[in-house]
Image 1 (spheres, helix red, strand yellow):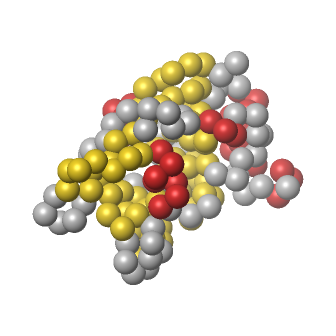
Image 2: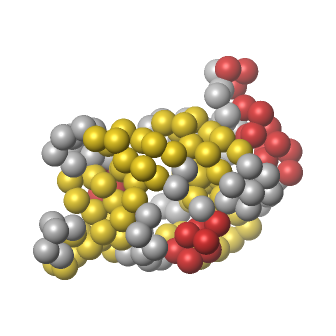
Length: 158
């Protein structure tokens, strides 16, 4: 599988540098369930949200689709709602964190939900459970300003 992994070249670069570090999302987000399939403009490209997924909105107004299972594994709904039907979610303290690395050049990744494009100094992110996985199935991009404003570094990779 590693020989044909769509992100092999970038992951080889990152893994050789051994620069992954642990981080945890600390900021709340707003989300609402998607009732019909729709295209979503994200900072990293156009993605498709399927009915039953959630459309998430971060503190800076950025939006992205997320599978319900993923959202509810990392966040819990609060009682706070707005007039447009968005529900506030807070990070679960016990939820697993992520491993991230800042990429100094423009880059692209194929995520399980679509093709994403990162700008120089954006972050490549993977699930903490994939710490020892050289070519994880699930990687994504987080914009530099958003990452630095919504995540906290918890430890360096050992």
